[in-house]
Image (tube, rainbow, N blue to C red; front, side, top):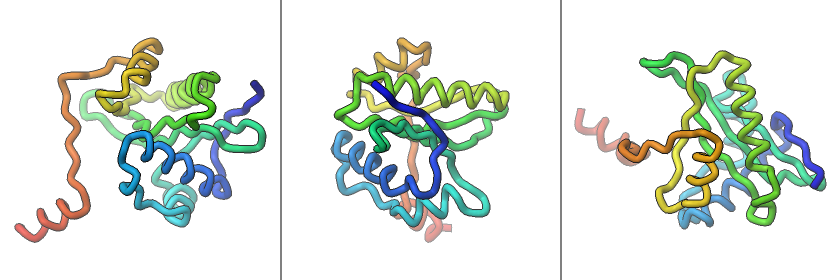
Length: 159
């Protein structure tokens, strides 16, 4: 299998969005994706990029992505958040996921990052096994907390 891992460029964003939508179908949240190609282009390649993205390219097609952004831990210091590691269903098991995760970890290490964190759905056992085999700790005693757009509006209205 011939593939390459590289930093994403602005013109990759339509294929990146395609993979994001593929993930939404897999996670049974098909209508949850609101981001557009234009959003990805502005947010990832504007004056102050909100994220960085690595892509796995095979046969002139982007078959996987790892989208990351910088965070700061009050306990550890500089950290990265891996928002999504997506490999197209047809390419799972090909080594692309490992190659993308390797690239994220090498990148974080080169920046002196103290921690890389991400979430995984509790029913996604293949992903949990994959991450644990790589040495990641799946913290089952933590709950993810979200305040969505409507929740933010409701919160502000109560101030």
